[in-house]
Image (cartoon, rainbow, N blue to C red; front, side, top):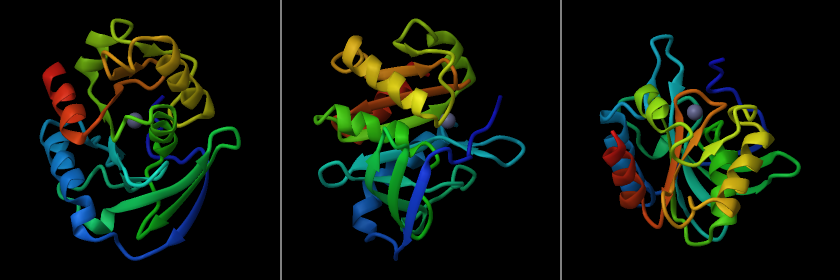
Length: 197
Ligand SMILES: [Zn+2]
């Protein structure tokens, strides 16, 4: 089932002006690379897919906004700051000109679990997904996009498999076409994905 784009956590949003361009420059550079590689984009029905984030301060991170996958170019108006989150309560607190990505919780659990991680990229690509499903560390098929089950599955893999130290890419079996890459910087995560293509 394709249900990308619907927020499944309880979102607390404070409307705020955009972050300074300097805060999103590198993030936007890598978002461009992902868009060009068609790893972030939109389906023919206009529903966007894929999202990108970087750690900001402590647990906080800056992420592309909800419903921005269909735009060829983003700027600071398209990014939100996730200021806090609670996995057990399925809550995300964000601020900015628009709501944080509907997949923010998947990013949040990577930052919360791995202090060394400074960048997370979630992409969609059918051929990559089919090629690496169950070959790279893979979440259970029963865990759907954007759910607490998916968040718990990501945490499980980060603790139980080699993904945190080695592959730094995981496949989402219950979220067709979905993969998540992460790393100590955006270039590492981005290049890892491009190398899989
Ligand atoms: Zn997705």
